[in-house]
Length: 236
Image (cartoon, rainbow, N blue to C red; front, side):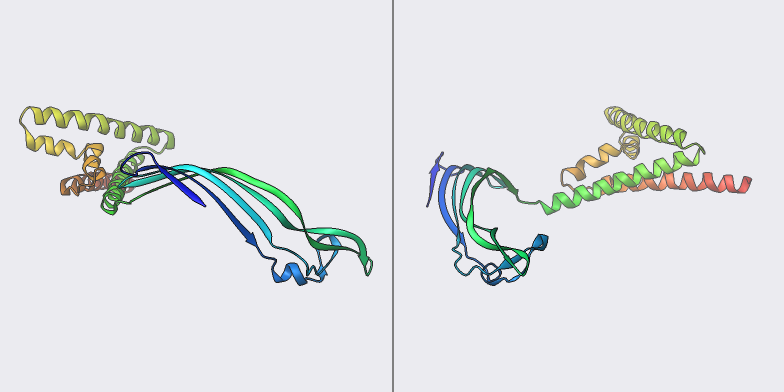
């Protein structure tokens, strides 16, 4: 039994309520088991078991939109004739006897929250690419900073300082040069602005320049790190 009430003409927002009944029939183990149970007890067959009964009432709210949907629902389930292993008070071969009986009852209630959306594969792809390029450029800068000093703490602080300077100075320098009508120096400054290169890819736009800039940045700092380490090796 189920009912739905529309809260608007489009049918996007609905209230619903329902009442349902179900059962679980005794399985072969419940009916015929004759074996040692937990705790050194012996379980005997129970051929007269009845099915477990469940009655569930639920009510909730659901909204549907072109790209996503959400549901909030509360439920209450009453359990009757639950099959439980129960001592009989007798003994078999010196072991306490237990058997299955329909002696259990109870209830379960709770709140359900559900949501779904349509995945934009193109946006996820460009976001993944943007994160990989951002991580590669940050790793190259950090590697170069590590090649400048043998102290781990100093290398970490230097890496943080370089990345912070690039985040702020790259944005400022690019906008300033572009405002003065110097597009070529502004484009060069964008190489040192990781967030500016992240923006188009983060919006789902496959911008070739936004891909090339972090690759150039990573390559430049990797070359600097290699030259630094090679120079240290030659000096002994």
